[in-house]
Image 1 (cartoon, rainbow, N blue to C red):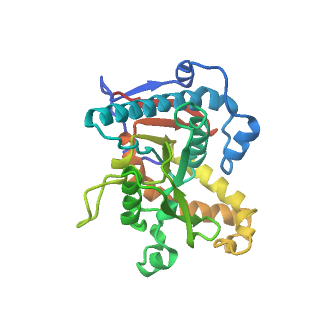
Image 2 (image 1 turned 90 degrees about the vertical axis):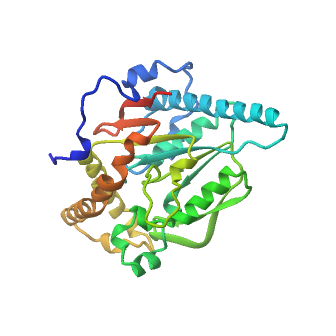
Image 3 (image 1 turned 135 degrees about the vertical axis):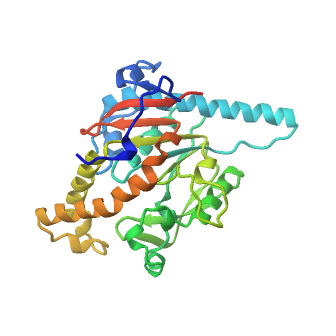
Length: 320
């Protein structure tokens, strides 16, 4: 097992987090009805993900209810503030950030939350956006000689991402975001997603909780715009296994598609594919996890920890 200083913990009598087993967390729900079918869940799962209806009931349903309380509270505060200020300033979207490593299951968690939140009363319009759309185009990454750092903080158009979030929180309508293609491994020119004043916006990405700026950059961060944040967590060795497994799945599917950026990996033998995926993980994704992603874990409002079966086995909630 690899020694990781960043994972070292110190026993202290107090913690900013309340810690729950899955059963303790499941007992918090005030309903036994899961507003999600197996067919719907199947469409929400990512590659090689195993989220089950039981997990939705035990983990995501209570979490969606808690988040619903947060949204309702902010909406109520907005209404009372408008009365106090004697104006009719409309509410702005409640923004939820979802962070975590490559292959840890952020997208699946985000899609499940989006679906469940939309079914609680009071905030039916829930949008979801991935920060991949704010990666610099491949041509620009190659020009800057940082293609091997794709996914690291410096590979993003940070100014555009901050402007996007600022516009959302300013109440602007029809705010656009670039669209990223995992098939082409690049931004799609001229294609955009439009966000038009939803009740809730979920922003999912690797480094969304980071609070570091390069010299000369504004001291404002993506997480400054979040009303609530979630970190999806698992041990490094486990995430590596998931990453390699996903790579093998892609080798037999996505990589064989026309115009796939990684088509040259489609003809690798299984041993070659495992070695290639392991090398990419060890030199790029693991470095990004240790340097930039995992250090932001403690900045989250809630942490979902997964075991080797991809199942959530613990929840940590920041104390108010």
